[in-house]
Structures are given as structure tokens and as C-alpha cells.
Amino acid sequence: MKIRELIVDLYGCVADLNNSSWLTSVLESAAKEMGSTIVKTVSHNYSPIGITVILLLAETHISIHTWPQYKYAALDVFICSDEADPETAWNVVKAALKPASSKTREIHRQVT
Amino acid sequence: MKIRELIVDLYGCVADLNNSSWLTSVLESAAKEMGSTIVKTVSHNYSPIGITVILLLAETHISIHTWPQYKYAALDVFICSDEADPETAWNVVKAALKPASSKTREIHRQVT
Image 1 (cartoon, one colour):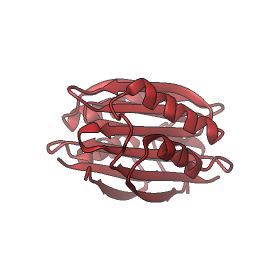
Image 2 (cartoon, one colour):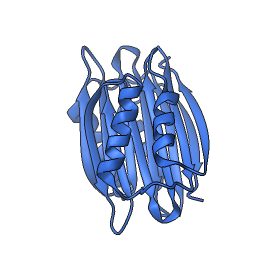
Image 3 (cartoon, chains in turn orange, brown):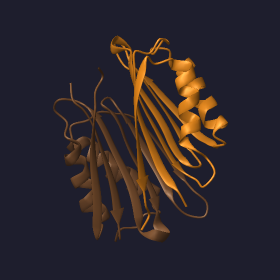
Image 4 (cartoon, one colour):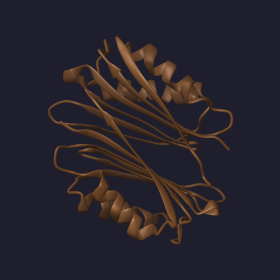
């Protein structure tokens, strides 16, 4: 059983990072494209600006936190699955948020 | 503004890793001890076994995923704050779950 966590910093995003319903739909598309099952979705609008969206998945979770004032978003794709590939979700988010640059780190976690 | 993500693998946990209400209370205590504000809590019981609890915080999030059959838990403490220290939350979780061993990784994220 593979447990992988993809940690991505997105810089210079062209998209509106303060639109929670749109960001939620982006993450939901990312989860579906990866073949994941969405169990629960939570989101929050920070004051005065910034969004968090977290999808609790049958295969663990996806989270995004945005700092629109910096055009920055922090994406985590934590997946426990032999089939679902976190890279697939990241590619969907990348195409939607259109970062000028990004930094990706992949962490492998083991149950034993 | 510090953004730190503490990623911890807990092995050989003595505590009951399939008790979602107890795990939720542990994470809530961890968040409070760190001085964080809890915005929303979501949890899920996997079939036949395993729990996810995620706290959406004013300072981002804490998540835990458990695999009771392996006595393993995966904790993420993602904190955007100059005051709150993710180590404080980890110490609360450690005292509650009583792992025989653990592996900790700290990731610094930057908005620019």
C-alpha cells in the first residue's frame, strides 16, 4: 500500500485565490480526475482575505491554503492508494490556478 | 510570517486508534495547547477500520489518519503563525497516543 504526500508551493498564481466555491470545485475535479472518492468537504474564508479548502477523501485528503495578497497557494495531496496518483491531482490544480512557478516535494510515508 | 508543516509518523501506538471521538478530542486539545483557534472539525470512520480527523484552524490545519491494524498514525500540523509552535501540538498527540517510536519531518513553506 503506497502512502504518498505531495507538498506543492504555488507562486504567482494568475487565478483568483479568494474564491472559495471555485477553489472547492477545482479540488473536487482534481480528486475525481485522480479516481478518488470525496467523503467530506470543508472550507473557510479568512478575514480579510485567504481561503482554506480541505477534502476528506476515502484515500485520505487534499488541502489548499491560499494567500491571495502574495498570489501564493499551499497544496497538500495526501494519498493512500496503489492506483491514485497525487501528480494527477496536482496537474489539475496547476492548470486551474496557473502558477508562474512552483516547488514540489514528495514525501513517502510508511505504516511500518 | 512563519509557515511550518510538521509531518510525523507514529509507530507502535499503545492508544486505541479506532476511536474517532477520542482522537478528535486529542487534536482539539493539541490545537488549544498551541494557542490555535479551531474553525471546523471533520472526521470519518473508514470501513472496516481506520480514522481520519481534520481540524481546520484559523492558523491552517491539523490532520491525523490512523491505521489501527498497524498501530500507525500519520499526523500533519500545518501552522501559519509567528506564535503557535507545531511542536507543542505534536507533544500533546505524542503523550496521548503513546507511540513506541516516531519519525518527524519539518517543512518550511514560504509565500514568496
